[in-house]
Amino acid sequence: MILQDEIYGLILAGGKSSRMQTDKAALQYHTNINQRTFLYQLLQKFCTKTFISCRQDQVNQLQTDELFISDENKYEGPLNGILSAYHSFPDKAWLVIAIDLPHISDKTIQELLRQRAPLKICTAYATKASKKPEPLIAIWEKTALAAAEKYIQLGNHCPRKFLSGQDIKMIFPDNDIELFNANYYTDYLEAKNRMAST
Image (cartoon, rainbow, N blue to C red; front, side):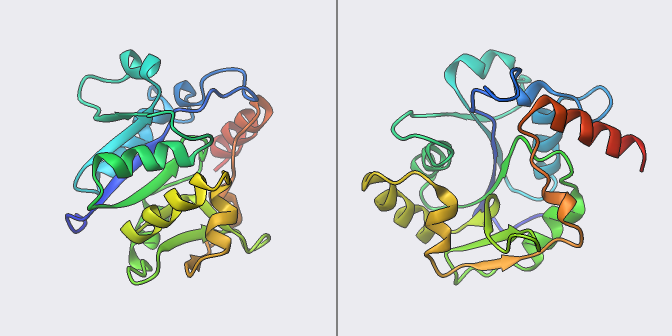
């Protein structure tokens, strides 16, 4: 399945992983492949182009064929990476996925694309438990990125709060575990054990 040309993929891998205490992008949930490359190859199946959002000091860790966008460091938090991509290609919508979502699969991405509402500013997953948008597994339309830049320039940083105040479409996974976020090493081990048992 190939997307329309206006959607690019973005893997957010530029965080410092302070809670994990090791680079989340280098973790291996799947045999012989790190999480950064796994997600990159996953989005390549669906997006015309896919990029890794990273810090400049991470560039030498990428595979030679992996496209990247260096964080501009204009803002704090994950919106920094998303807006850096927006500045590079302002005419594109972005399918954004965080590096610390170990249970994302083809099915997760296919459903996000199938339910995309391009007239909304964003189509985002939400867990059934929280019913709050997950901004780092979402399709950000061009209009969302322009509005997010104004939001962050006012001193705000939280992408979830931003989306919660906007006209978006939320979708829900079959199982909330698809959106499990691995922030700590114990989360990594939990995800690995869960994968091994299925």
